[in-house]
Amino acid sequence: MSRLRIGIIGCGSVAQIVHLPTLYQLRNLFEVAAICDVSPKALAGVGEAWNIASRFSRYQDLLALDTVDAVLIANPSAYHAEATIAAMRAGKHALVEKPMCLNLAENDAIIAEAEKTGRLVQVGTMRRYAPAFLEACRIVKEMEEIRLAKVHDIIGRNNLIIEPTSTVVAADDIPESMAASLRHRQEEQIREAIGDQPAALKTAYNMMLGLSTHDTSAMREMLGMPKKVLYATQRHGGRSLTAAFDYGEFVCMFSSGSDNIPRYETFLQVYGADKALRVDYDTPFVRNLPIRLSLVESSDGQRKTHTIIQPGWGDAFTEEWRAFHHSVRSGEPTKASPQDFRQDLLLYRDMIQLMADGEPA
Image (cartoon, rainbow, N blue to C red):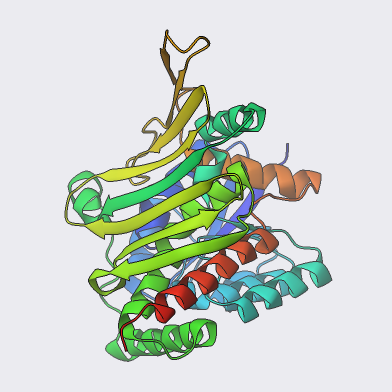
C-alpha cells in the first residue's frame, strides 16, 4: 500500500510524544512531509529532532504543498474546525485530534465541506481502535441482556505523567497577545455551544470535550446512542462530572474528572445476567501500555471463571493511524466521522442543560 505524506499542524506534547513516534513506527504507511506551529521554539526543536526540513508558522502555507496528502490537526481545539475545513478545501484528508470542534455549527460546517470535497475527516478517539475494545464490543453484541453499564474516567493531570517520562519541547515563546486571542476565541465558541452559562458549566463543557469524548464515543459504539440523559451534575467548579444515560432496558452510569494523582483510572464496564466485562485503559502518554479486557462469567450460577484478555501488544494510536490509512486508500468511511462526533455534542448539550436546571437560584 502506498505511503501517505503527512503534514502536522500543531507540534505540542501529543504530537511529540505519541503521533511522531507512531508515524515513524508505521513508516511503511506514512511519511512526515512537513510540520507547522506558531511557536518558533517548538517548530525548530521538533523539526531538528525528527529531521523534518519543511517547517511553517502558518498552516495555510503547509496546506499549499503538493507534497502533502493528509494532515494531522493537533493545534489548539478552538482552531480545529477552521484548519479542518481549510485542509479539505486544499484537497487534503484530515485526522483531527479530539475534540474535532467546539459546537454544532462548526460540526455541521465540517460535515458540509466533507460532503462537498469528498475528503475524509477522522476524529482522534483512538481508544475505539484498541483490539481489546473491539473484542469487548463483539462480546456485548452477543449478550442476551444488559442490566447495567458504567463509564468511568478519573485521571491525574497529564503533566504528572509526561514530565517524568518524556522530553517535550515547550512552546513557551508564544506572545501573550496570541494566548489571549486563543482564550477569547474559545470562550466565544463555547458561548455559541451552550449560551451564557456560569463558569463552572463552561469548565464542565470543556471537560466533556477534552476528556469525556473518549468515553461517550466508545460507549456509543459499544451500546448505541442512549435514548436520553436522565440526569447530569457537576461539582468542584465543573471538574467532577456524573450522569446517567437511559438505554431503556438498562442505565449507563457515567463519571469523569481529574485530580493530582499520577495515574489513569479509566474503564468501560457492562453487566449481564451471567456475564460481565470491563475494558481498562492506561495513560496514552506512555506508549504501548496494554489495554486489557476482563471477562467474568458463570454457566451454572455456581462456578465462576475470570479471564483476562490481552489481544496483543501495541498502541491504540497505532491502530487509529492504520485505520486512517485504510479509509483514505480504500475509500471506506471511518467510524470516527464528523457525523459520529456530532452525537457527542448532542449528549453534552443535554448534559449542560440538566446541569443548568439543577443550579441553585
